[in-house]
Each structure stands twice: as structure tokens, then as C-alpha cells.
Image (tube, rainbow, N blue to C red; front, side, top):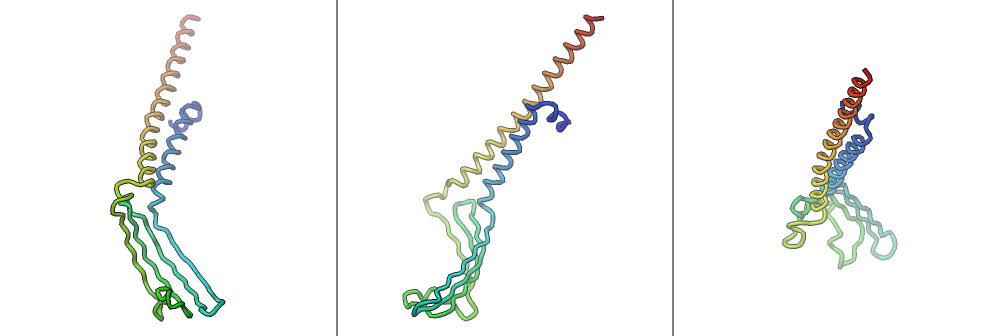
Length: 155
């Protein structure tokens, strides 16, 4: 019924598309919290300190304003004495990081605001869609009964 009505009444199709668009905005807003794959490769093949560093891992923002990340890194070569943290063990190193904001961005941040706004827009789109269906049904009923009345007058 909804597909036929949407094809016959552009107002319903417009409201239906708006509802679908808001659902897409909600999905986009929650995309900030998806797990992300990260990687890097750094090479310094010239100079006195020749070294190579590689790493791969995953990271994820938390709803509470922090982040979690885990990964593996490996560093080979000769490192400057002031950059010894770049050098890794023979087999590389696993790394786990947890960060949490103490004050700034803990209660609210732009990503959560976007999620809240998208949810509000999604909730607002549903009544507009229902209103378009009701309005089109009312208009169709009025035209039908006008047609019936015209037929009775003609009779």
C-alpha cells in the first residue's frame, strides 16, 4: 500500500525519502564510533641513523569521550639515542592504549551531539510521513465523495 501511495502522491514519496535520509544521518553519526584500522610505515634509509618502523592496529572511540586502541609495531635499524622508544624488541611489540577525558569532552562532544541531533531529526520525520499519508487519504476521500455527489446530481 505504501509503495503504491508513494507512487501516486508525491507528498508521500517526499516524506518517505526524508525519513530514509534521516535514518542515513543516524547511521553516519554512529559511524564515528566504528572500529577503525590504522597502520603506518616510516623509513629513514639515509643518514647516519638508518631505521625502519612499521605498525598496524585498531582503534575505537568510546561513547564516554575516550578511546581504546590495540596494535603491533616493529622498529629496526639504528636509532638516535634520544629516540630509543622507537626501537622495539626483536619480535616487535604489542601495544594497548586506553584514553579517557577527565573534564573536557567527557560529558558531551561534537560526535555525540551529532548522534543526538540525528535521532531527533529521525523522530521528527516519522510524524511528517504519517501526516502526508493522512493528508493524501483525506484529499482522496474528499475527491471521491465529490465525485459520488456529482454522480448523484447527474442522476
